[in-house]
Image (cartoon, rainbow, N blue to C red; front, side, top):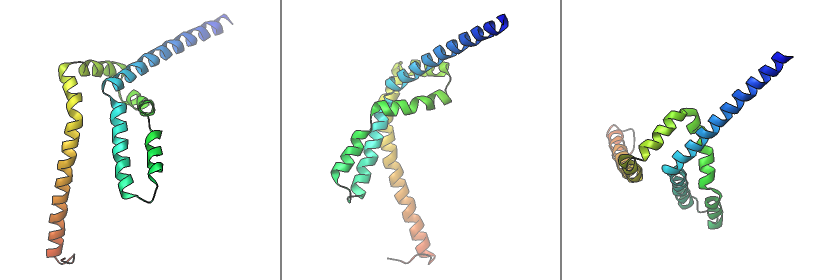
Length: 148
């Protein structure tokens, strides 16, 4: 019986320790997401997609799109993202990322990333259009598509 109590105490201590470590890691993940403004960036991406959908689907009233937009929150995005970071990064890696983003270079990276992404998307769209035109012209020359 004494061995059973000892085993239960050891299990309880180890579970409590693991829970405390998980809470510390989760807290640090939330700090990383705050520092990187991941929730805000995610919300911005959602709004951009909703705006595009709103323009292409004008059968729904504007109020429906407005309600969709209001339904998304930074907190929800962060809550959805925490387990993903937890799965892919160790606690030490999370701490290291926080340290990185606290440096001048890390802060610059955070500042410039949205601009880089936006410029890259524009370049990617332009490239996609150029490739599409070349493919269409080649297929028209081969008689696989009608010439307009």
